[in-house]
Length: 96
Image 1: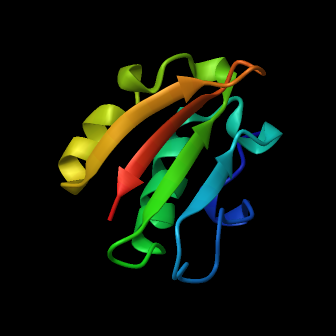
Image 2: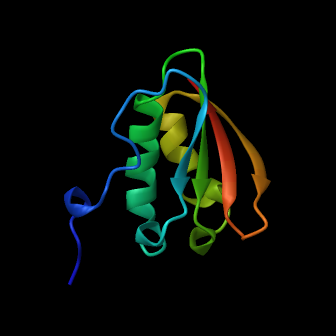
């Protein structure tokens, strides 16, 4: 049985007035790269101008250039790949 993205807890529910990290490594993201992209967009939209959000993505999807960078390009934001975490996930910094 597939779970609707509407039934999944959002990555954030408020606007962040400072730089922050969005945890897209939780188990709910492991099998759903589309959910990662959707919640990455939400995280960007919930970051105040002049700040950045670190998108910390699940290791199950590999390097974010394979599924996330195109979506970030479409969103028209500046971003940079930061590093791979010790746990295997990846950090991409998005400047808003």
